[in-house]
Structure formats: C-alpha cells, structure tokens
Length: 88
Image (tube, rainbow, N blue to C red; front, side):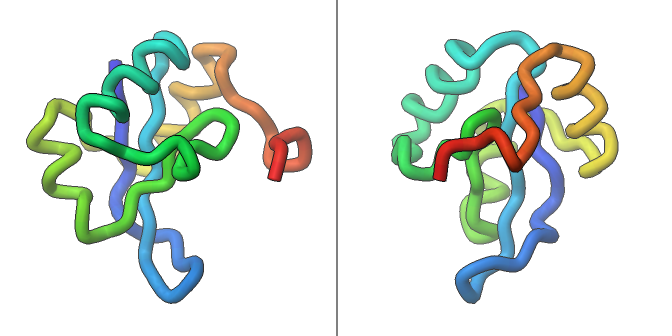
C-alpha cells in the first residue's frame, strides 16, 4: 500500500510530506513514476513530496495516514532505513 503523511516537515523554504510503500520499493517507484516524481525526491526509503502536490498524490491513490502511522508501517514492513544510514 502507498502511504503519505500530512505536509508538516519544513525544509528548503517549503513544507513536505513523506510518501512510502509498506510493500516494496518497486511499488513505491512505480507509483512515483506514474506521477512524474523525480528520483532526486527519493531519500532511501521514501519520497519527499512538496505540500503543493499533496492533493494530487492523494487523488492518485496514496492513503493518508499520520506521521506516526507512516513510520510504524514502514518499520513493520522492513523497508525503513534510519537517517544515519541513508546516502546523501
């Protein structure tokens, strides 16, 4: 399932959401590709989604969940990569 949390995370003068899959990275990348999201928005285990694209992503089928639910589902899926282990 594709999940998105509400726009809450400030960075680079914008507010961001996180887009994840609790199934596989293949599912996540396919969803992102269908929306034309650039791979540079992928941060190891999630895509960063700017607030202005939130409604579009939800309309495309992402399930809205809280930030806490998103991280719990990502951890339970085994797909979570701690920030310290991500390539930047």
